[in-house]
Image 1 (tube, one colour):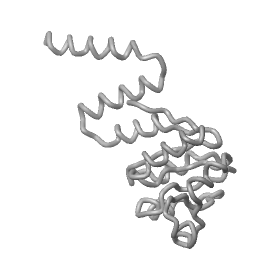
Image 2 (image 1 turned 180 degrees about the vertical axis):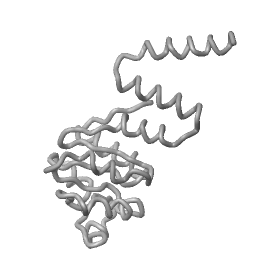
Image 3 (image 1 turned 135 degrees about the vertical axis):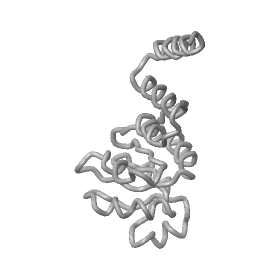
Image 4 (image 1 turned 90 degrees about the vertical axis):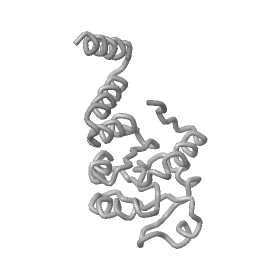
Length: 162
């Protein structure tokens, strides 16, 4: 029992060193995932880590479970688009079309920019940077790093590191 008590004291010490609620939530969800292996804790980490940003910001959600929740985080009355015009974007489109304000997709694929995707307009990442009024839901786990780089180059900061 001494080993368990020492482990708990270490966990508590680390937790107390964290300065903000977001870091504490990430830490607790990471611990819960490590203990249980349940994906719901990873999902909670994603929601905490990539929370709503005001216009020009973004949401990120990688798992196919809860796509409607990622879109629901976009404030009503605001336009949004899906970043990623691929399989994940196709799945999220079912939810996006149900919401008022859906403006289309963003993709670096020139053919999709020219021709659209699934009947929706597709803008380039460069055009996205000039549209600070749009909210962005990342519809592709593969696009995460690409989008992060584009946003940071355009002066839109993203929280990193967990």
